[in-house]
Length: 92
Image 1 (cartoon, rainbow, N blue to C red):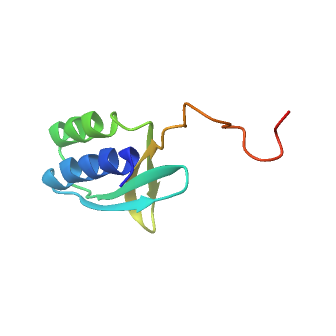
Image 2 (image 1 turned 180 degrees about the horizontal axis):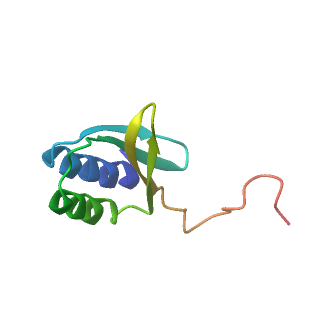
Image 3 (image 1 turned 90 degrees about the vertical axis):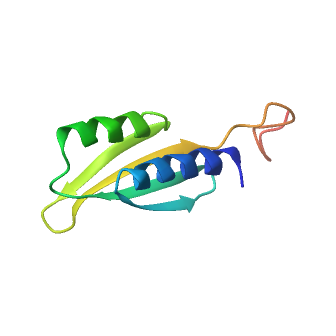
């Protein structure tokens, strides 16, 4: 599992410990965590949740009247530090 996956799994575990149902997905450039946020989440729990997702590279909240509230967090994969990171077609 890449480092982004390990970090995302740790975020998901901490959110689960706070009582949120989480999903973790691996993508090409990042690992994402999503959690359904219940309506009755206390202000103290919100603070704890925000402390957890602050460890991610990006996070946000999607709220709709149809699907409730979904918290998301993204941990980017690290960029290689050696070799040609520009990819094919960009060589000199």
